Length: 275
View 1: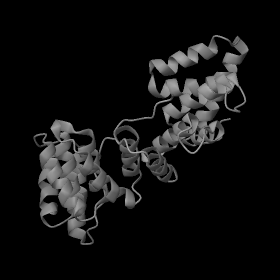
View 2 (view 1 turned 90 degrees about the vertical axis):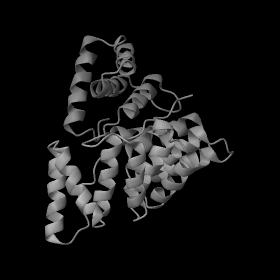
View 3 (view 1 turned 120 degrees about the horizontal axis):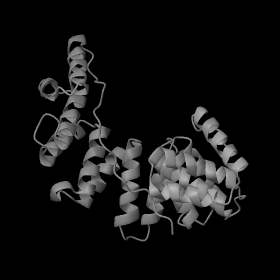
């Protein structure tokens, strides 16, 4: 059975503020600039000043800085405190952050009930990373009979927002027969969408399907090699290069030249319409 992509996503600062006052908006821009220049001490001071004035984005950003240890001592519980302040102001980014913190459980903070609570709030606001995280939680850590159905529904919602990891994982569930019924061609379509957004797992899945020619997919070693080559260049990982070498071992010099040409054209097209 194929496995889902399961990594969590690194949190990054919110770069825009809801302040309408020009002076305060300028302060926020200055804080972001200081952060990007790695002047974390200045960034913390400016974000803290704005947070004390109720700026949701600054409150969230202080949570990120405490979780990452940027300019302050790394402290997940201090990060949670700031995330909760922003989440209570209906920050979907902060609600997702809380779901992620309680899900992955840094420093013994794991609490799946809290993770579901915060993920659900953010997912209800169409936050694709929260939908993805909640889907993973149901898929891997909830034993209820309807967990797979819940996971598929959430992956689908995130996939509809062009979130490539969700498109890939929904494809995996179709291929595994975990969504209504096994449908390899539906999986192929989802892998294509994710691959067009430079998702290496989806590229490898496309390569594998074209190489095997299973589930109604027409076998095509050149397309299989192209996707494996693009995935290997994106990740430099052994699974990608191993699949590529396996496919290439059965091709001649002219075909290898054609694969290089196809890969370059695909990349020039920003991974769109590559087949």
